[in-house]
Image (cartoon, rainbow, N blue to C red; front, top):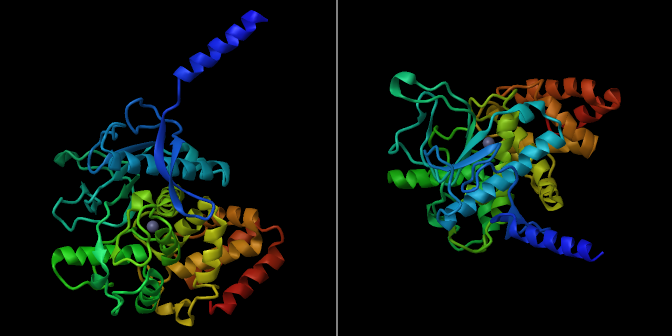
Length: 403
Ligand SMILES: [Zn+2]
């Protein structure tokens, strides 16, 4: 008996020496506020840097993983992205049983990365319109051996934050207004353009020395989700300064869980939804899964209230508009709201499986009124429990929104 106690003490002592490494990351409280928490990171393969089995977090153009002893602002962002990317990956493997994700190659994740994406060169020149306040997922490339450019796999890029003064955001005289009012102005003025893209385009114009204009540069590929989810992430992402009542706006995308989920969803869906450019379809699908991964009842409520497909606070003019059918982002919020609503009709579990299956019947370039609707119906025939009645209910919901 004595020796058993001794043994137990020895085992306990030895355990305390192999203490797990923990990292500070941003997570959500139950009321969805951002806060800092100590967590353990799964599947790291290095003892000294953010190099894991499925993700390697690097800074800018580097190919070396960020060291654990790098400056804190860097390790904080590296740990936060690693933590939430792992959560998103686990979601796709455990919830929707994605064999594509479980077989996918390790993803390189770049933080504090300002270069634009070049399909041939991987990174555009450093001086070419550096990027801030956004994030994007890039497709794999073959490289260019004659120029010494190595092939690369799918990557996720997070830009550094850069503050934009409210007077530079092209929203009429809102200088002393609060965030909610700013959002209303923003929504009214620019018809569902993403908040993220909006902030990014403002800063880009400021750097170029011009007057900000929300419909500016064409070079924002795959940088946005719908405004409803970005807006929500934005309101709840800053643990230090309050997001409301301030005059400076920025998006520190590597610290916003919903943006991290959104970007990972692009990668996870890319077996069918090609990452060639941003469309309402792929942004809406990535937002849908970001919402699912987040699993926040508060986010669900927010979507219900503000989604432009069926929300209480959605304005009539934010309904589907045919003239925006092929516009980059114009109907993103609408598509997201539509998918969310169809999920609610089918119920959480069936709805989730349905949306994952949906990617087989649509493409990045699908039209909303034609191919997306057709895809929904085809998918229902395949996976709905009661296809005949469920199809009628879905079509009814679409009809009521002018589709
Ligand atoms: Zn996106």
